Amino acid sequence: MESPGNAMFERYSDEARRTLFFARDAVTEHGGTQLEPEHLLLGVLRADPDAILRFAAPDIPIDAIRARLVAKVADDTKPPLAYEIRFSDRLKVAMERAQIETDDLSDANIRPEHLILGVLVKSSGDAIIVLRDAGVQASVIRKFLSGHGRQ
Image (cartoon, rainbow, N blue to C red; front, side, top):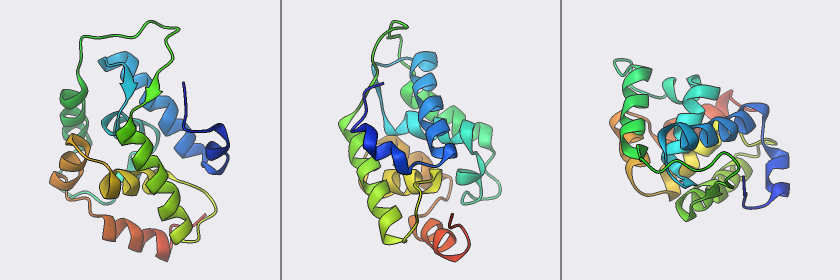
């Protein structure tokens, strides 16, 4: 998997690294040729579902969020097993923002919540719509992370 820079991932928590692993799996499972913010959110839902669910409206089931994301990324294009899956420009921008959010909150590690913030603040497209429709708000995530979510 080509990344924006391997040194960037040194600060990633185990959950955030698993998120990226599962995001790549989402590309191979649902199609596409590069990792998009929607794949990242699918990775979060698999690696650390509470990172989204604790901020979503209580009447929104995880399966509904997952189904909407899958519908947005479903693509008949399946990369070969040895194919190097690249980060889309939209995802690179969101991941850069996740690092800024982490620094702004004086957190040592980038966690799935920071990745979600990066998507909400700097991404574009269906990922933001799915999060907002689920009731996820950047201000609530920041408050959580600044209050008791630090690691």
